[in-house]
Amino acid sequence: MKICVAGAAGAFGMKHLDAIKAIDGIEVVSVVGGGPDDIEGFAASRGIPHATKDLGEALARPDVEAVILATPTQGHAAQAIRCLKAGKHVFVEIPMADNLADSEELVRVQKETGLVAMAGHVRRYNPSHQWIHNRIESGELKIQQMDVQTYFFRRSNLNALGQPRTWTDHLLWHHACHTVDLFQYQTGEVASEAFGLQGPKHPELGIAMDMSIGMKTPSGAICTLSLSFNNKGPLGTYFRYICDNGTYIARYDDLYDGDEKKIDLTGVAVSNNGIELIDREFFSAIREGREPNGSVAQCLDAMRTLDRIERSFPS
Picture 1 (tube, rainbow, N blue to C red):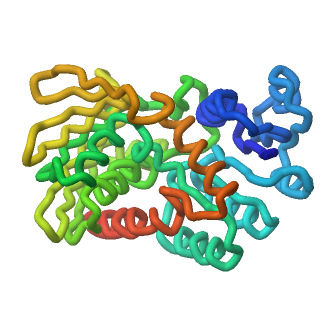
Picture 2 (cartoon, rainbow, N blue to C red; picture 1 turned 90 degrees about the horizontal axis):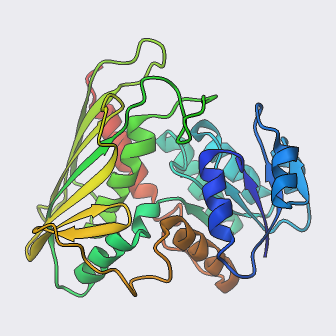
Picture 3 (cartoon, rainbow, N blue to C red; picture 1 turned 90 degrees about the vertical axis):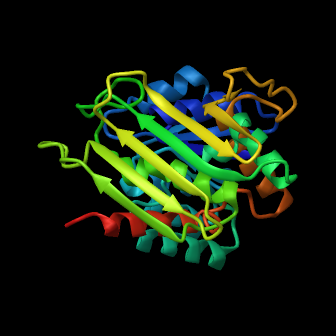
């Protein structure tokens, strides 16, 4: 299968390119870059035959079957729709959009075209969360509460590589998106109650630097989520699962029990790299002509909950 990666020279574009190296039968034949990128030099250094700063040019290539969009959030929905209308399967990094209306339009176009469109909700694929999910599915565990902390130190507009960004992300639509989807996925329910509080906005970036979110499902499971761009360490996201049969703490691809004993995740998946696993699912769904786990349609409930949380903020 021949694919294009848009935003290839960015932090997550490179993560996808590295993950694809481990997947048989996938060839990156085109990369798309943004304004400051030396995308031609980047492509040459990786042996990729085509490079452009025009997504349309890549979409016009008959050899491109699918596109991974690791581009700035604000363009996700429109670019994903362009890919589908050009006849290409599309994987769009989260969030699929930064508002509900654009998310709903993307889902509508996916249903109209019948192509695979998948959102990058990688937490579904991290082996730590898969281990929990497998035990929920088997009836061994039931979530009573998820307590999640997502902390960064980002008082200036830098990406995951510490480089200046040409766009601004958002604690709600970009980062809370992970946990909102994961909570609803792990419980198998859509939150019946959802609200949020946000701290002061950055004087230059115009985004809230601190945020707190609460959710509750119809069966009574609750989730508390704290997010910050003001935190000076430790950094990252930590998930505490408080269940009827134990407590578990997930730190990306590692999992610990309530006694801080590390759980062996051998055999949970073919890799410990969540991005590789989600990319594998995207390509498998295309080959098998099926809906992937994490399709834009499946993830629309998360976008609806994010919209409710946003509307709960005091004006």
